[in-house]
Amino acid sequence: MSRLAPTRRRLITAGAAAVGGLFLPGCDRLSRAPSFRTFLDSAEGLSYRAQRLLQLGQPLAREFEPRFLSPTFRTNGTALPASPNYQVMADQDFRGWTLRVDGQVMRPLNLSLDQLKAIKARSQITRHDCVEGWSAIGKWTGTPLSAVLEAAGLKPDARYIVFHCADAMSDQPDGTDFYYESIDLIDAFHPQTMLAYALNDKPLEIGHGAPVRLRVERQLGYKHAKYVMRIEAVDSFAKIGMGKGGYWEDQGYEWYAGI
Ligand SMILES: Nc1nc2c(c(=O)[nH]1)N[C@H]1C(S)=C(S)[C@@H](COP(=O)(O)O)O[C@H]1N2
Ligand SMILES: [Mo]
Image (cartoon, rainbow, N blue to C red; front, side, top):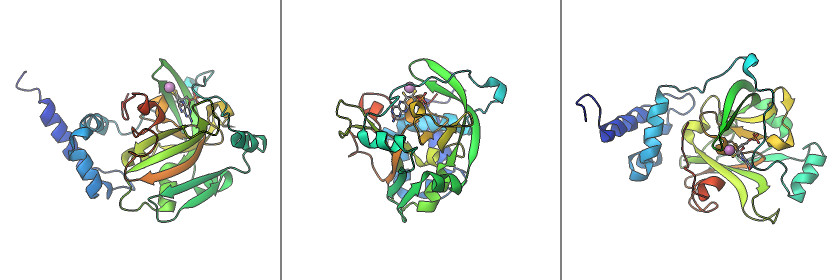
């Protein structure tokens, strides 16, 4: 190895130190939270730290001008949740839908779509990358997740945010294996991370996750949970699903693969 090339170990240590000194608005206390430090220092945090190091140089996902919008934005995975509960809500234009925010929060919330929209809004034109080998550029409008989490107030033990979805992945539509995903607090408070309710200035279609889906722009497609019903702040996701942090993670995908 050349003398100039830092060793993997040194790079990773530098990454941990850099993440430790993080600067993100709304979560400057994050790096000092003891549980987060322990995770960063542990062996299981290794590829996670390496990915975070890479992202320090480019904190925002690229945003595009409208002329780059894809003429069509395909759907992938569930296109219509089979659950009768979901279909009743869809038939009523999601007037009966509420977003539950609970777990390690000071103030659990039940937000209607209108209440969610009233908190704050942001739009961004970004590129979605699916591991199956397709990409599409779309304009997303939604409520920054940070604003929702600030309204609920995270308790000191909160380490991850879990998104519980309306679509069951087995044949039983109201079974227990609903699609779910989880992200760390760096992504949760990232300025482009949002609960999106519109795509290309139109209310989100059912195929794209109506009424609300996650956009977590620096991550791969499967982390962008559609049909979000409940947001749970947790100190560990070991007991959720099969314990790997998401439906696809439980099938072997990386929790944080990066792009
Ligand atoms: N609830 C839920 N969310 C999901 C999925 C799913 O099947 N169910 N598929 C994921 C995958 S693999 C991708 S690429 C995107 C696709 O989003 P789109 O259908 O809006 O293109 O949603 C992600 N979120
Ligand atoms: Mo995907």
